[in-house]
Image (cartoon, rainbow, N blue to C red):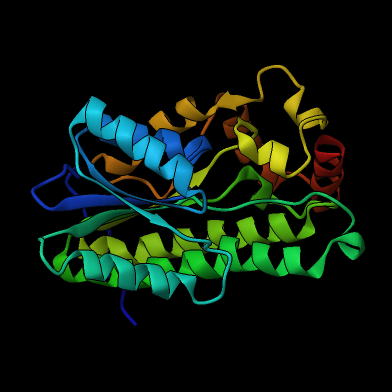
Length: 279
């Protein structure tokens, strides 16, 4: 199959009916991405499990930014939830010209422990949310973007996906999938006018570390490694909405240095370093 050459894509600005859909949009990086988009007058569809938090965010954003916001409380770690979300968004379009022109697949979680000791329900939920639902949403909404010749997809990967990490086997493998999947997709969709970006943050101040029981790990104690959710969000949005975005956005100077050096390191060394940082 002959591939088209990459072409320059125009910056993506919101038009009448343009919406950004952000999963995991009630806290952390997802909330800050939504906030940055709101400052740029993007209408929003926010998806998260906690309806109370979603209502609070929607109320604040409507008052501060004068934009349209839809909230869809959902647990995206449930099988079939991607299609369910797509159907709910489709129903929102019945009486409006609502179009999802920016998809932010941010929802995800990690668990850091011995694989054999993890609960199988948690492992399955992690794979479903971090991999399957992300892939399903990318396909469903990405198809319409390619047909329109306009849109962006921002998939949240991680520097943790650069190497297998002991005690984070499922999480690092899942993020590796997201990293490679997104980069391949960027090549496919570019000729159709759709920009696809693989965001790779490192340690970030958010609820992620608390949920993953990582707050005391070395990674979150090293000076200069931990970024704020707002800093990651601003870098991600600027990169994603710009003209002809490259498919990879590694945030933070130290993470960028690591991304450059990582392919040169023996895999055994990268695994050992990851183990030390994550425990």
